[in-house]
Amino acid sequence: MKGLKFITAFTALVTMGLTIVAQHKVGAITQQPPSPLYRDPIYDGAADPVLVFNRAEKEWTMLYTQRRANVQSPGVAFCYGTAIGVAVSKDHGHSWVYKGALNLEHEQGQNTFWAPDVVYQNGVYHMFVVYIKGVYSQWGGDSHLIHYTSKNLWDWKYEGPLHLPDHNIIDPTLIKLADGKWHMWYKDQKLNSITMTAQSTDLVNWNVDDKPAIGGRAHEGPKIFWFKNYYWMITDEWQGQRVYRSKDAQTWEHQGLILDKPCHRNEDTPTGAHADVVVSGDHAYIIYFTHPGRKTHGDDGGLDKDGAYSYSTKRTSIHAAELEFDGITLLCDRDKPFNFWLADIVN
Image 1 (cartoon, one colour):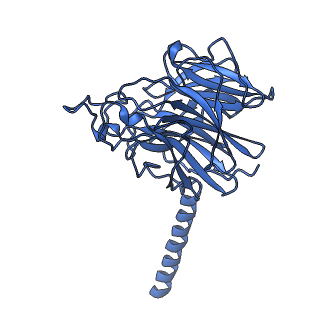
Image 2 (image 1 turned 45 degrees about the horizontal axis):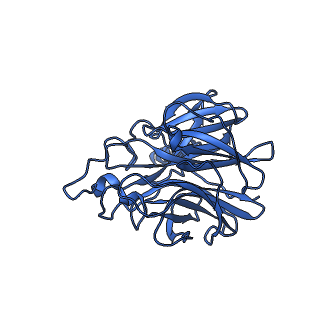
Protein backbone atom coordinates (compact mmCIF):
# COMPACT_ATOMS: atom_id res chain seq x y z
CA MET A 1 0.00 0.00 0.00
CA LYS A 2 2.85 2.33 0.95
CA GLY A 3 4.50 1.45 -2.34
CA LEU A 4 1.36 2.34 -4.25
CA LYS A 5 1.11 5.68 -2.42
CA PHE A 6 4.79 6.38 -3.25
CA ILE A 7 4.25 5.63 -6.94
CA THR A 8 1.13 7.81 -7.00
CA ALA A 9 2.94 10.66 -5.27
CA PHE A 10 5.96 10.28 -7.57
CA THR A 11 3.70 10.30 -10.64
CA ALA A 12 2.01 13.47 -9.38
CA LEU A 13 5.38 15.15 -8.85
CA VAL A 14 6.58 14.16 -12.33
CA THR A 15 3.32 15.43 -13.85
CA MET A 16 3.66 18.66 -11.91
CA GLY A 17 7.27 18.98 -13.03
CA LEU A 18 6.33 18.46 -16.68
CA THR A 19 3.61 21.07 -16.31
CA ILE A 20 6.08 23.55 -14.82
CA VAL A 21 8.59 22.88 -17.61
CA ALA A 22 5.86 23.27 -20.22
CA GLN A 23 4.71 26.52 -18.65
CA HIS A 24 8.32 27.75 -18.45
CA LYS A 25 8.83 27.14 -22.15
CA VAL A 26 5.87 29.31 -23.12
CA GLY A 27 7.41 32.65 -24.06
CA ALA A 28 10.83 31.49 -22.92
CA ILE A 29 13.97 33.28 -24.06
CA THR A 30 15.72 30.61 -26.11
CA GLN A 31 17.62 32.75 -28.62
CA GLN A 32 19.37 35.38 -26.50
CA PRO A 33 22.33 36.84 -28.43
CA PRO A 34 25.82 36.82 -26.92
CA SER A 35 27.28 39.99 -25.44
CA PRO A 36 29.24 41.23 -27.17
CA LEU A 37 27.74 40.09 -30.44
CA TYR A 38 31.04 40.56 -32.27
CA ARG A 39 34.61 41.80 -31.86
CA ASP A 40 36.99 42.22 -34.78
CA PRO A 41 39.71 39.53 -34.35
CA ILE A 42 42.35 41.45 -36.33
CA TYR A 43 42.30 45.03 -35.02
CA ASP A 44 39.59 44.85 -32.31
CA GLY A 45 37.99 48.06 -33.52
CA ALA A 46 34.71 47.14 -35.22
CA ALA A 47 32.47 50.22 -35.48
CA ASP A 48 29.61 51.65 -37.56
CA PRO A 49 28.03 48.26 -38.41
CA VAL A 50 25.51 47.62 -41.18
CA LEU A 51 23.85 44.22 -41.70
CA VAL A 52 22.91 42.91 -45.15
CA PHE A 53 21.41 39.56 -46.13
CA ASN A 54 23.43 37.72 -48.77
CA ARG A 55 20.70 36.19 -50.91
CA ALA A 56 23.00 33.81 -52.80
CA GLU A 57 24.82 32.43 -49.75
CA LYS A 58 21.76 32.54 -47.48
CA GLU A 59 23.73 34.22 -44.73
CA TRP A 60 23.82 37.57 -42.98
CA THR A 61 26.79 39.82 -43.66
CA MET A 62 28.08 42.54 -41.35
CA LEU A 63 30.07 45.36 -42.93
CA TYR A 64 31.81 47.78 -40.58
CA THR A 65 34.53 50.38 -40.17
CA GLN A 66 37.63 48.39 -39.22
CA ARG A 67 39.32 50.77 -36.78
CA ARG A 68 42.90 49.75 -35.98
CA ALA A 69 42.44 49.81 -32.21
CA ASN A 70 45.33 47.51 -31.27
CA VAL A 71 47.89 49.35 -33.42
CA GLN A 72 50.24 51.71 -31.59
CA SER A 73 49.87 54.94 -33.56
CA PRO A 74 49.86 58.70 -32.94
CA GLY A 75 46.62 60.50 -32.13
CA VAL A 76 43.53 59.27 -33.94
CA ALA A 77 45.46 57.52 -36.73
CA PHE A 78 43.76 54.28 -35.63
CA CYS A 79 40.51 55.72 -37.09
CA TYR A 80 42.16 56.39 -40.48
CA GLY A 81 43.62 54.06 -43.07
CA THR A 82 40.65 51.86 -42.21
CA ALA A 83 39.17 49.22 -44.48
CA ILE A 84 35.60 47.93 -44.40
CA GLY A 85 35.64 44.71 -42.43
CA VAL A 86 33.35 41.77 -43.20
CA ALA A 87 31.87 39.16 -40.86
CA VAL A 88 29.26 36.56 -41.77
CA SER A 89 26.63 34.58 -39.85
CA LYS A 90 24.96 31.35 -40.93
CA ASP A 91 22.86 30.97 -37.76
CA HIS A 92 20.54 33.97 -38.10
CA GLY A 93 22.86 36.45 -36.43
CA HIS A 94 23.94 34.59 -33.30
CA SER A 95 27.57 33.91 -34.17
CA TRP A 96 29.81 35.84 -36.54
CA VAL A 97 32.98 34.76 -38.33
CA TYR A 98 35.49 37.26 -39.67
CA LYS A 99 35.85 36.90 -43.44
CA GLY A 100 38.35 39.65 -44.21
CA ALA A 101 38.37 43.23 -45.44
CA LEU A 102 37.02 44.61 -48.70
CA ASN A 103 39.46 45.78 -51.35
CA LEU A 104 37.97 49.17 -52.22
CA GLU A 105 41.12 51.10 -53.12
CA HIS A 106 40.72 52.93 -56.42
CA GLU A 107 43.52 55.48 -56.08
CA GLN A 108 47.17 55.38 -55.06
CA GLY A 109 48.30 54.57 -51.55
CA GLN A 110 46.43 53.70 -48.39
CA ASN A 111 43.21 55.59 -47.88
CA THR A 112 40.33 55.70 -45.42
CA PHE A 113 36.88 54.10 -45.64
CA TRP A 114 34.14 54.63 -43.05
CA ALA A 115 30.53 53.80 -42.28
CA PRO A 116 28.97 52.05 -45.31
CA ASP A 117 25.32 51.59 -46.13
CA VAL A 118 24.08 48.96 -48.60
CA VAL A 119 20.81 48.63 -50.54
CA TYR A 120 19.66 45.94 -52.96
CA GLN A 121 17.95 46.57 -56.29
CA ASN A 122 17.35 44.31 -59.31
CA GLY A 123 19.94 41.71 -58.35
CA VAL A 124 22.67 44.23 -57.50
CA TYR A 125 23.96 45.47 -54.15
CA HIS A 126 24.80 49.17 -54.02
CA MET A 127 27.22 50.37 -51.36
CA PHE A 128 27.67 54.02 -50.39
CA VAL A 129 30.70 54.59 -48.19
CA VAL A 130 32.72 57.48 -46.78
CA TYR A 131 36.09 58.03 -48.48
CA ILE A 132 39.02 60.16 -47.30
CA LYS A 133 42.34 60.27 -49.12
CA GLY A 134 45.28 59.22 -46.96
CA VAL A 135 45.74 58.66 -43.23
CA TYR A 136 45.60 61.43 -40.62
CA SER A 137 46.81 61.57 -37.02
CA GLN A 138 44.32 64.33 -36.11
CA TRP A 139 40.69 64.65 -37.13
CA GLY A 140 40.74 66.05 -40.65
CA GLY A 141 40.66 65.26 -44.34
CA ASP A 142 37.99 65.99 -46.91
CA SER A 143 35.34 63.28 -46.76
CA HIS A 144 33.14 62.29 -49.71
CA LEU A 145 30.57 59.60 -50.42
CA ILE A 146 31.48 57.10 -53.13
CA HIS A 147 29.44 54.40 -54.84
CA TYR A 148 30.24 50.71 -55.48
CA THR A 149 28.18 47.84 -56.90
CA SER A 150 28.41 44.09 -56.35
CA LYS A 151 26.49 40.88 -56.98
CA ASN A 152 28.01 38.92 -54.08
CA LEU A 153 28.84 41.48 -51.33
CA TRP A 154 32.56 40.73 -51.70
CA ASP A 155 33.74 41.83 -55.15
CA TRP A 156 32.90 45.50 -55.57
CA LYS A 157 33.06 47.69 -58.67
CA TYR A 158 33.88 51.37 -58.16
CA GLU A 159 31.13 53.48 -59.76
CA GLY A 160 32.45 56.90 -58.75
CA PRO A 161 31.79 59.74 -56.32
CA LEU A 162 28.37 61.11 -55.53
CA HIS A 163 27.91 64.63 -56.83
CA LEU A 164 26.73 66.20 -53.61
CA PRO A 165 27.72 69.57 -52.07
CA ASP A 166 31.47 69.90 -51.56
CA HIS A 167 31.17 69.58 -47.81
CA ASN A 168 32.66 67.06 -45.41
CA ILE A 169 29.85 64.52 -45.86
CA ILE A 170 29.72 61.20 -44.00
CA ASP A 171 27.35 58.47 -42.73
CA PRO A 172 24.80 57.73 -45.49
CA THR A 173 21.51 55.91 -44.89
CA LEU A 174 19.07 55.05 -47.69
CA ILE A 175 15.51 53.89 -48.24
CA LYS A 176 13.14 53.76 -51.20
CA LEU A 177 9.91 55.64 -50.54
CA ALA A 178 6.41 55.44 -52.01
CA ASP A 179 7.29 58.10 -54.60
CA GLY A 180 9.51 55.50 -56.29
CA LYS A 181 12.68 57.44 -55.51
CA TRP A 182 15.64 56.49 -53.41
CA HIS A 183 16.20 58.92 -50.56
CA MET A 184 19.52 59.37 -48.79
CA TRP A 185 20.22 61.09 -45.47
CA TYR A 186 23.75 61.97 -44.41
CA LYS A 187 25.75 64.06 -41.95
CA ASP A 188 27.03 67.38 -43.28
CA GLN A 189 29.96 68.37 -41.09
CA LYS A 190 30.25 71.88 -42.53
CA LEU A 191 26.63 72.63 -41.66
CA ASN A 192 27.13 72.17 -37.92
CA SER A 193 26.92 68.36 -38.16
CA ILE A 194 23.24 68.06 -39.00
CA THR A 195 21.40 65.65 -41.29
CA MET A 196 20.74 66.63 -44.90
CA THR A 197 18.97 64.60 -47.58
CA ALA A 198 19.03 63.92 -51.33
CA GLN A 199 16.86 62.03 -53.84
CA SER A 200 17.58 59.79 -56.82
CA THR A 201 15.69 57.64 -59.32
CA ASP A 202 18.73 55.56 -60.33
CA LEU A 203 21.14 55.61 -57.32
CA VAL A 204 23.62 57.53 -59.50
CA ASN A 205 22.26 61.03 -60.03
CA TRP A 206 21.21 62.85 -56.88
CA ASN A 207 19.21 66.01 -56.22
CA VAL A 208 19.99 67.64 -52.89
CA ASP A 209 17.26 69.14 -50.72
CA ASP A 210 18.14 72.65 -49.53
CA LYS A 211 16.60 72.35 -46.08
CA PRO A 212 17.96 70.15 -43.29
CA ALA A 213 16.07 66.92 -42.67
CA ILE A 214 17.07 67.02 -39.01
CA GLY A 215 18.75 70.06 -37.48
CA GLY A 216 19.29 71.16 -33.90
CA ARG A 217 21.91 69.48 -31.73
CA ALA A 218 24.98 68.21 -33.59
CA HIS A 219 24.85 64.50 -34.38
CA GLU A 220 25.99 61.82 -36.81
CA GLY A 221 25.18 58.31 -38.00
CA PRO A 222 21.54 58.75 -39.11
CA LYS A 223 19.65 55.51 -39.76
CA ILE A 224 16.17 55.29 -41.29
CA PHE A 225 13.77 52.33 -41.18
CA TRP A 226 10.05 51.45 -41.33
CA PHE A 227 8.49 49.81 -38.27
CA LYS A 228 5.00 49.67 -36.71
CA ASN A 229 3.46 51.88 -39.42
CA TYR A 230 5.97 54.72 -38.95
CA TYR A 231 9.23 55.80 -40.44
CA TRP A 232 11.89 56.11 -37.77
CA MET A 233 15.24 57.87 -37.72
CA ILE A 234 17.90 57.41 -35.08
CA THR A 235 20.96 59.65 -34.84
CA ASP A 236 24.08 59.35 -32.71
CA GLU A 237 24.44 62.27 -30.29
CA TRP A 238 27.52 60.73 -28.60
CA GLN A 239 25.39 60.24 -25.48
CA GLY A 240 23.08 57.59 -26.93
CA GLN A 241 20.75 57.52 -29.92
CA ARG A 242 18.09 60.18 -30.53
CA VAL A 243 14.75 58.88 -31.84
CA TYR A 244 12.65 60.63 -34.50
CA ARG A 245 9.25 59.53 -35.84
CA SER A 246 7.49 60.35 -39.13
CA LYS A 247 4.48 59.32 -41.20
CA ASP A 248 6.03 60.40 -44.51
CA ALA A 249 9.83 60.48 -43.94
CA GLN A 250 9.67 64.23 -44.61
CA THR A 251 8.52 65.81 -41.33
CA TRP A 252 10.14 64.38 -38.20
CA GLU A 253 8.97 64.41 -34.58
CA HIS A 254 11.83 64.82 -32.11
CA GLN A 255 11.61 62.18 -29.37
CA GLY A 256 13.77 60.75 -26.58
CA LEU A 257 17.12 59.00 -26.28
CA ILE A 258 17.87 55.27 -26.27
CA LEU A 259 21.15 53.44 -25.51
CA ASP A 260 22.02 56.42 -23.31
CA LYS A 261 22.63 54.58 -20.05
CA PRO A 262 25.20 51.89 -19.23
CA CYS A 263 24.10 48.28 -19.42
CA HIS A 264 25.05 45.37 -17.16
CA ARG A 265 25.75 42.98 -20.03
CA ASN A 266 29.36 42.11 -20.73
CA GLU A 267 31.14 44.86 -22.73
CA ASP A 268 27.84 46.73 -23.26
CA THR A 269 28.86 50.04 -21.72
CA PRO A 270 28.86 52.99 -21.45
CA THR A 271 26.50 54.09 -24.28
CA GLY A 272 25.55 52.79 -27.72
CA ALA A 273 27.11 54.49 -30.75
CA HIS A 274 26.51 54.65 -34.55
CA ALA A 275 23.85 52.00 -35.05
CA ASP A 276 22.06 49.98 -37.69
CA VAL A 277 18.51 48.65 -37.33
CA VAL A 278 17.26 45.38 -38.80
CA VAL A 279 13.51 44.81 -38.91
CA SER A 280 12.81 41.08 -38.94
CA GLY A 281 9.16 40.09 -38.93
CA ASP A 282 7.46 41.86 -36.05
CA HIS A 283 10.75 42.66 -34.32
CA ALA A 284 13.26 45.48 -34.70
CA TYR A 285 16.85 44.94 -33.58
CA ILE A 286 19.38 47.71 -33.10
CA ILE A 287 23.02 46.82 -33.80
CA TYR A 288 25.54 49.27 -32.35
CA PHE A 289 29.06 49.60 -30.99
CA THR A 290 30.44 50.54 -27.58
CA HIS A 291 33.75 51.63 -26.05
CA PRO A 292 33.73 49.21 -23.09
CA GLY A 293 37.04 50.52 -21.77
CA ARG A 294 35.69 54.05 -21.30
CA LYS A 295 33.63 55.63 -18.52
CA THR A 296 31.77 57.75 -21.07
CA HIS A 297 31.73 57.54 -24.85
CA GLY A 298 33.86 60.67 -25.25
CA ASP A 299 36.33 59.87 -22.47
CA ASP A 300 39.36 58.76 -24.48
CA GLY A 301 41.72 58.96 -21.50
CA GLY A 302 44.02 61.47 -23.17
CA LEU A 303 47.30 60.93 -24.98
CA ASP A 304 50.20 59.16 -23.32
CA LYS A 305 53.82 60.37 -23.32
CA ASP A 306 54.23 58.97 -26.84
CA GLY A 307 51.23 60.86 -28.20
CA ALA A 308 48.99 57.78 -28.46
CA TYR A 309 45.71 56.65 -26.88
CA SER A 310 45.59 53.45 -24.86
CA TYR A 311 44.36 50.20 -26.41
CA SER A 312 41.69 49.95 -23.71
CA THR A 313 40.07 53.24 -24.68
CA LYS A 314 40.35 52.58 -28.43
CA ARG A 315 38.88 49.09 -28.71
CA THR A 316 35.19 48.60 -29.54
CA SER A 317 32.50 45.90 -29.36
CA ILE A 318 29.37 45.27 -31.42
CA HIS A 319 26.09 44.56 -29.61
CA ALA A 320 22.45 43.83 -30.38
CA ALA A 321 19.31 44.88 -28.48
CA GLU A 322 15.60 44.88 -29.24
CA LEU A 323 13.57 48.02 -29.92
CA GLU A 324 10.04 48.06 -28.52
CA PHE A 325 7.14 50.30 -29.56
CA ASP A 326 4.99 51.56 -26.69
CA GLY A 327 2.37 53.12 -28.95
CA ILE A 328 4.13 56.46 -29.03
CA THR A 329 7.87 56.00 -29.32
CA LEU A 330 10.66 53.41 -29.37
CA LEU A 331 12.15 52.08 -26.16
CA CYS A 332 15.22 49.92 -25.62
CA ASP A 333 16.08 48.14 -22.36
CA ARG A 334 19.54 46.68 -23.01
CA ASP A 335 19.37 44.58 -19.82
CA LYS A 336 16.09 42.92 -20.78
CA PRO A 337 16.45 39.39 -22.22
CA PHE A 338 15.02 38.95 -25.70
CA ASN A 339 14.85 36.48 -28.57
CA PHE A 340 17.19 37.44 -31.40
CA TRP A 341 16.53 35.94 -34.82
CA LEU A 342 17.39 37.49 -38.19
CA ALA A 343 15.13 35.78 -40.71
CA ASP A 344 16.21 34.99 -44.26
CA ILE A 345 15.11 37.48 -46.91
CA VAL A 346 13.46 35.69 -49.83
CA ASN A 347 12.70 38.51 -52.26
